Image (cartoon, rainbow, N blue to C red; front, side, top):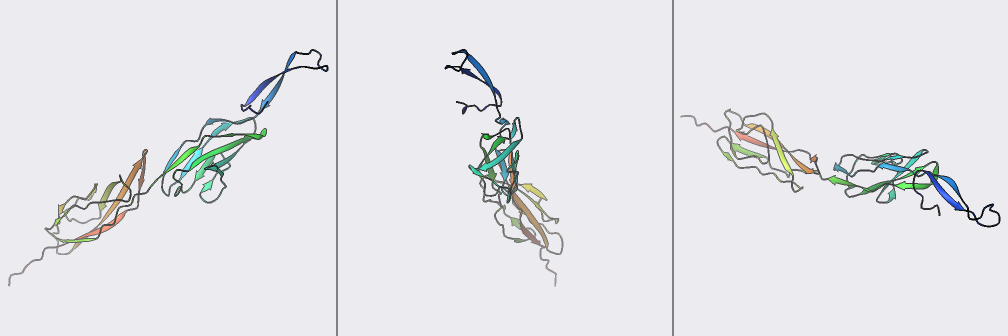
Length: 231
C-alpha cells in the first residue's frame, strides 16, 4: 500500500518473491520510489490588522519540481480579484480586511513531479481590530473668566485611549494632551472672540497592533469680557 507515503525523496519498498516465476522464492528485492510531495518548512502565521487595512499570509515550501499553490478561506478556494491577490502564489495578499475577522486561511501545495498528491498547510486565523471613533462633542462658547468643565471623551470601542490637540489661539488650554480635556479657566485678552478647533482621536491596541480612528473635531469659542464704559 503506497497511499500512506507523504514524504519528499527516495522511499525503499521491499518485495518478497513468490511463485514459479521467481528464481528464488522467498527472497527479497527492493524498489526505489520517488515520492514527490511538497514539504512545508514555514507554516502561515496568524495575522492581525486594523479594519480597512491590509494583511498577508506567507508559506515556505520545497519540492522536487515546480510548486503550485491554492489558498483557501474557511475551506473554500479563493480566486484573484476583489481584495485578494496571490491566491496561486506563496504569499496571499488581502488589500482590505474589513469583514474578515475570524476567517481562517490555509494553502494547498502541489508538486509538478507528482500532481496527484498535495500538502495542506495549517490554518492561520485573521484577527481584525476595530477602528475606534470618538463620540461627537458639540461646539462650545464661553466668556473669558468662565470655568470650562472637563470634556470627557467616549468611543464605540471599549478600552480605547484618546489624544487631542488644538489649533492656535490662547484660550487658557494646553496645545495638546492625552485622555480627557481637564477643566480650565477660559481666557481671552483680546477684544475679539477666539475660536480654536479641537481634534481628538481614539486608539485601540490589541496584540501590540495599534488602530487609530478618524479625528473628531469640535470648536471652543471664548468671547472677551464686556467692558463697561463710564458715562
